[in-house]
Image 1 (cartoon, rainbow, N blue to C red):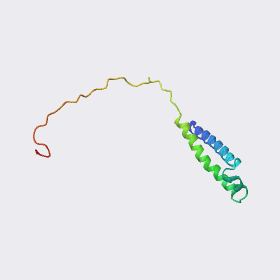
Image 2 (cartoon, rainbow, N blue to C red):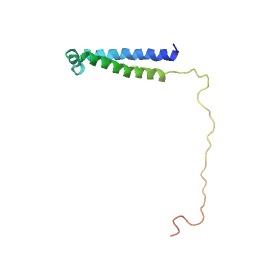
Image 3 (cartoon, one colour):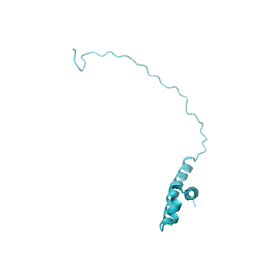
Image 4 (cartoon, rainbow, N blue to C red):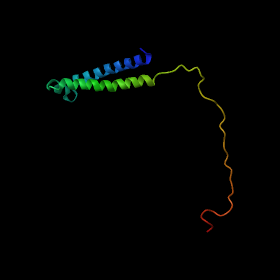
Length: 105
């Protein structure tokens, strides 16, 4: 399996773990009386599965994005950029001759 696919699957699995912990904490702390709703309705298990799936999509995507954005490359080039002088442009006054666009008043 290519290294980049393995990295994505690894971080997606980490996102699943975070989502499972998040779902368990929501149910354990009975946020919004969710534990009661899940255990006393026929659609409760479906709600838990949906919460877990959508949480996995959210936390997995964030985890993959974080992993990709924090990847580094070994740069052998010197840092800091070039220290060339910046050209300074001086203002030169120019006298205009003739009529103005509005005409002489």
